[in-house]
Image (cartoon, rainbow, N blue to C red; front, side, top):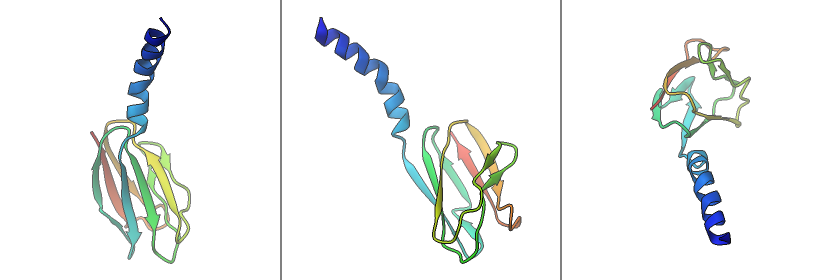
Length: 104
């Protein structure tokens, strides 16, 4: 009986754990560009923007209500993609810097 209860708990937690253990992707901010500029990920994946420029940048997606705040040189910002669809973003400080995150 105890084994059955333990198995039931493990199976109930497994989907949430599998979602939380998604892949990690990196966007490098360097030379006033996001690389890659277009990134496809699965729901539950994590995206890390790493700033290799000498000035701060942001990841700002107004429609998705996503705002990283300033990412200092040498620092990064993590985002877990939850909602499926396209998330266009810009650097609020340098609006010519654009990218698109596509969550499948």
